[in-house]
View: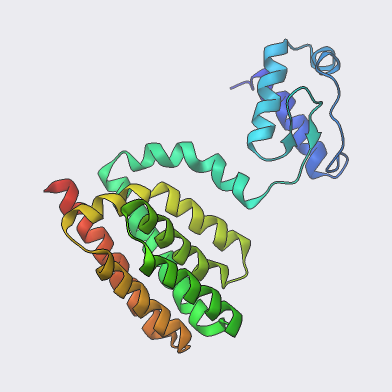
Length: 228
């Protein structure tokens, strides 16, 4: 099947960027020049530039010439967001995503217990205390997210941090729905406190078990709320 014109243009510049012939900060040719080089219409050129921007390979501020940029972790997961939302529309897709998130976060908790520094423990305790002080649902959800992110940050791996943030956005609805099944802020906080205590004690097995119990409870309550 022949490629569309915008795909041909996008792949051309992607190869130039990946080969280093175009470097971060370099300007792309003007639209008219690209149109002439590829015998393409303006709409095809703009669609190609948009595709490159979505990949994180271009930055294009308003009224400015597009420049080459370096993809970030955030841009990688932002690119996935649309597909993930469609995937989550299916109950089986949501269950699979919940399962993947649990395995990921259990691993993060285990790793945090192995490598957490005193400074990491201090930051995690601050996040835990903020969660315990939350007085309304919005504040509690925000501090809940911040606590889980603080665990991911102990890894010092931006991919883990980015994926953690992505999961939090993709599965945000389950936190809100879980709260309608009668669990109290104190109940969730106690689960967080158990995770914190295991990480502070540098006990990987206990940290993994505490995180697994916590996420199992979140998922159980979510489906209770959805299915009645």
